[in-house]
Image 1 (cartoon, rainbow, N blue to C red):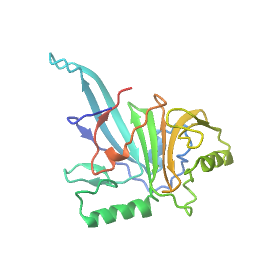
Image 2: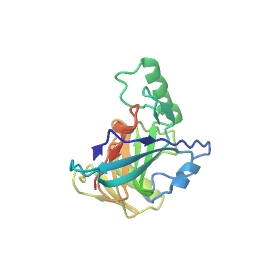
Image 3: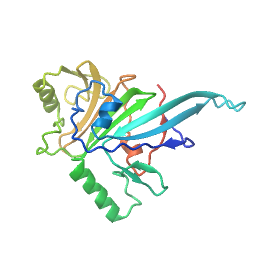
Image 4: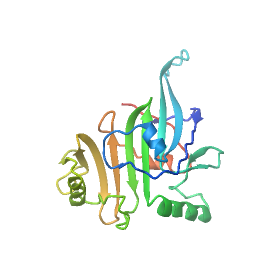
Length: 224
């Protein structure tokens, strides 16, 4: 993964007040049209990779990334449109921090949902549940192995823990859910978890929260 600092950014906004009718915790792919219909905001950029031979201006490859998020856009200090800042408030004023954190808690139910498409192909999905609230019935409790298995069994979706890499029998982080490999990092003590599915190479995990919800969009080119 490489951060590209010299790319031109095209940010497109689609705002819709329709109620979300998609179960984002099901791993089956979703279309860009479905996300737009369900009120997601679209942010796009073009990543151009040079061959870096210092001889000519040959372009090795070009990729367009379309990110869809449930987080509404704001204009940052550089006059660029990006998702509302929800992370890294070290240099921000306390009023802005309080306002944005309240937005995360009250309007987003402590849940950040992100889909990334590369050249119109669904690349990955990541769901961050910062704090799980038992009163919100629309967000499943995936803060333990037992709760995760129970949720998918109750909706008749095949699920199987995969004991590989960091995944163990006591703390499985990888699951095969309806024939899609997904990663679920959870903490039962902090009541939070991350849900990630990669649709292109089925394995790599990207922590996009640190890149795209910190007051800017850091344009990235993904190598796989």
